Each structure stands twice: as C-alpha cells, then as structure tokens.
Image (cartoon, rainbow, N blue to C red; front, side, top):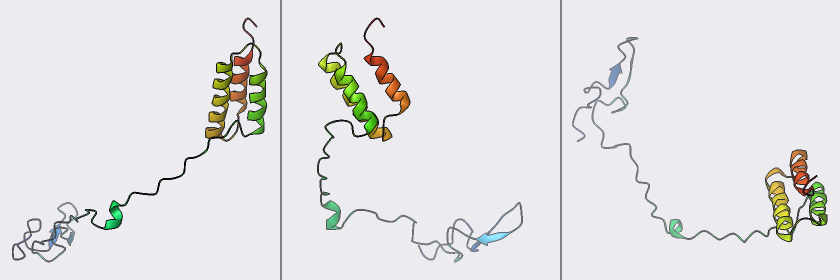
Length: 124
C-alpha cells in the first residue's frame, strides 16, 4: 500500500486552491505523494489492568440536621412555631429551607417571603 499514489493529491504531495491560486501540503499524504498506512485512527481500547479496577467509593455525605445559615435557622424556628401547620408540613418546609441553602448558599429575601407567606394562618 506504501507504493500507491495518494488519492487526494494524485501523487503530487501538494493541493492547489482554485480560488486563490495557492498551494498547500496534501493532508492525505503529508507531502509524500504516497498513500500512508496510517488511517488516522488510534486504538483506544482500555488494556491496562488499572482500567478495570473499580474506583474507590466515596463516603456517604452526611446531610445536615437542619438549616445552616442564620436566616435559615430563624426561618425554621418560625416554621416550627406555627401552631396551625401539621408536623408533615413543618418537616416539608424545613427540608425546603435546607435544600434552598444547599443550592444558593443562604436563604434569599425572596425565598424568605415565599415561606413566610405559607406560614400565614388560613383566612388572613
């Protein structure tokens, strides 16, 4: 196969640009004019033993018991102090506070207003 002419440049080793009239090295044979045995593909099969080892499992991350920021703690206290809410609703709102802190770092004013709106007694 090394003796065959390159199919792209026809064995010249250079290709011409018909618009600008310039020539460049052939990308197929890299200027040799002969077809290369290299197809451009590499074997990327994982053959090393280290590729088959299982990665170390990371330790389970402990979830915090409650909100971490000062605003979150205060808001959780307000939720727990609301007498008209069921314990399930209180737990759900507290979890929502913790998830908001996990994604935003702290309780934003908009989030605090949203939760306080849910704390209002019905009919007010």
